[in-house]
Length: 306
Ligand code: SF4
Ligand code: SF4
Ligand code: SF4
Image 1 (cartoon, rainbow, N blue to C red):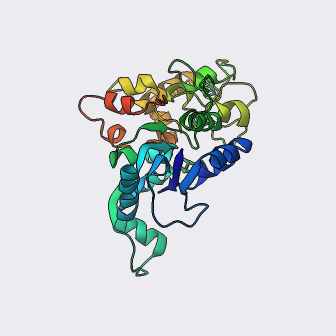
Image 2: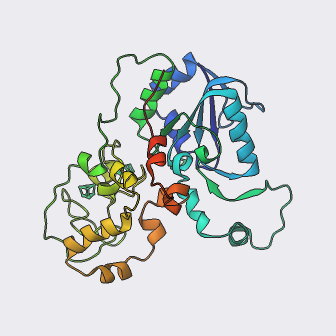
């Protein structure tokens, strides 16, 4: 298999994750031909290839040209990580105008030769056709490894690390739901949660109930921090055009904390960073298009077809 690996508007975290697969990475890279990977090798041109792994969304004209060239050159284009699938954390910058962003970062310095901005950040598949999407910040390593092995003709009969049915993060979380233990809205930066107990029931904003599962719930389960929803909306959220995620989460919190919704809304300081921060740039979620989010849901297939 000929492979191209590219980072657009991302942090290189997904690609670093690829390198951290250890033995598997070396065997995958060794047994296949890497034709383009600016992260590791000096090649100017993107050669024809079987698979392009793309991290990051598209914010400027240069990135758009790379994305289009990849689409022309690769039989399959794969979005790796929530930045490529939804826009990810860099999409939060869309709260500001492009000129405002430049001013915030560089004040009034004049720059020459900057690529022309597109006015906002686009998920990869808003610009070019994508064959497979692996959301997650970064996507689960086992999934990345499985996809690469399957695409390179290995791993035949290897079971998918994803659950067979669409589930939420809560379904994979082992923390125990005990009602009645919350005393108010809590922040992980301020107070440590009680171990072993559901974070939402303790008053932390955990997006587990409204987030696509498959990651194994490492954030609440292993690291003791709330789910930030990096894998994006669950099936239920996507299939209901009018589903209001913030309202849904607030209702759970209202019940757990026994406070009014108004009090809770006032206590939440930063809504864009609270509800699906990785999806802020996703056009369908942002605009709640007529016809619902079913198209978006179909685009989220993680099934590998050979
Ligand atoms: S999805 Fe997360 S790890 Fe991957 S490039 Fe974006 S910010 Fe980095
Ligand atoms: S801690 Fe979060 S993911 Fe775990 S059960 Fe509670 S709400 Fe769900
Ligand atoms: S628990 Fe939530 S934030 Fe953590 S990896 Fe899973 S989806 Fe992402």
